[in-house]
Every structure is written in C-alpha cells, then in structure tokens.
Length: 273
Image 1 (cartoon, one colour):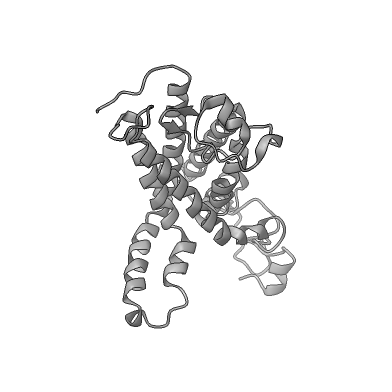
Image 2 (cartoon, rainbow, N blue to C red):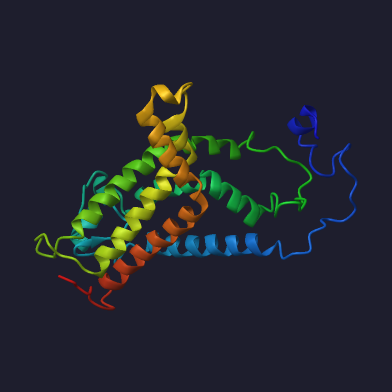
C-alpha cells in the first residue's frame, strides 16, 4: 500500500517500493482490452456525431419536433431560420450555432458523471486499462490536481441536468401536437421522443449525486419514510447507472438524428393518428 507521501507526490502505484514485485505486466489471459476499446470507440462515435450536429446549425426543427441538441433555442438566429420554439435570451449577438449554448450543460453533467469518468479514464487514458492490469503511468495524483479536481462540480451540473430534462419533457409533450398546433397528434417521432425522455430521466435520477441528495444526511430512515422510499427507488436505478448512461446517450443521438432526417426532407414522419 502506498504511503501518504507517495500519493501526494505521485510516487505511488503498482511499481512503488513495498508493492509485490511481479515482472509480468499482468497475468490475465482473457481479452481484457476489448471492453475499454469498445468504450473508447463508442464515446468517440458520439463525440464525432454530436460535434458535427452542434456546429451544423441546420436541420434541427421539423414541426412539431425540435432536436434535443438545440432545445431550448436561446439565440435569435433560431427563429428566422427555422421557425421553431425560441426564447431569444441571448439576442442577435450570438451568431454561431445555438446548440453550443445548450450542450455545455448535459455535456458537463456526463463528463463529470462517476460512470463516465471510469469509462473514459480507462478507455482513453488507460488509468487503469482494466482490473488487475497495471496502468502505464509512473505517477498517480487521483482527482486532487487541476484539471481533474474540477470533477467535483458534478453535483452542480446535476441541477442543470434537471432543468434540461424538464425542457426535453416539455418538448416531448409538444410532440403530441401537429404542425397546426392541434393536440392529438402521434407520429413515429413522438415515440422516439417518449423513449428518449424516459431514458434521460432514468439516467439523471440514477446519478450518485441524486442518490445522496435524496437519502444523504439522514441518521434514521424510519423517521423519514418518504425520503426512504425515494432513496430505495433511486438506489435501484443507480444499480443500472452504466446501462442507463449508454442507453440515454444513444437515445438522445437517435432523437436528434430523427429530427435531422425529417428536417432535411429524407422522409415524412409516419403518423398513427
């Protein structure tokens, strides 16, 4: 076990004095590299796609659907170009894609998420690459130095994520209207948006910060039965946090891509009624 001095100065790790002297890099015989490689590939694919869509500044509104990457539209350049929902908070001075304003909040929430930290630490930095596989770095400082110390803002991004999820819930409700703003519409896009918002809320509420907010700082659950039931529910979701993280990541990209296909005229939204 590394001493406190070794940890502070980055001298700890599997090669530190006092640790077992195992010459082999690892003793695993399975394809341990497959999981971090798939994780890195999946995250890279989403980063590439979301970057393209965020800077495209086009094809993000097809009545009654607005892309989750661009909602809420807070810049003036949303309305005259696309006719979609627009709050016009930033005014005309914001000339680039309005998605840049919005994506910082869900992106910050996911980047600082406990599961995603594990995913990209292993997938991109090999820190560590897998269980029982030594990381290639000579020093280890954890999340005690800049920039990783900024991971502690996760709890604040959680509140922003709640607001974003609320906006996407509103957009999902609007997907039940037709292009003349009459209620009673349901198309394939409505189902896509419903699936997305269910997964978004499930992932957000399964967050470790949410679990702490709901059930933390309590000495006796018996005196707080409502919070205890809420904590039990969040704990069940938390046990599936990894699966919900990936499912919601795929669903939000799918919802955006569906709007893109409609807005670019690839096909019309199939309507059920």
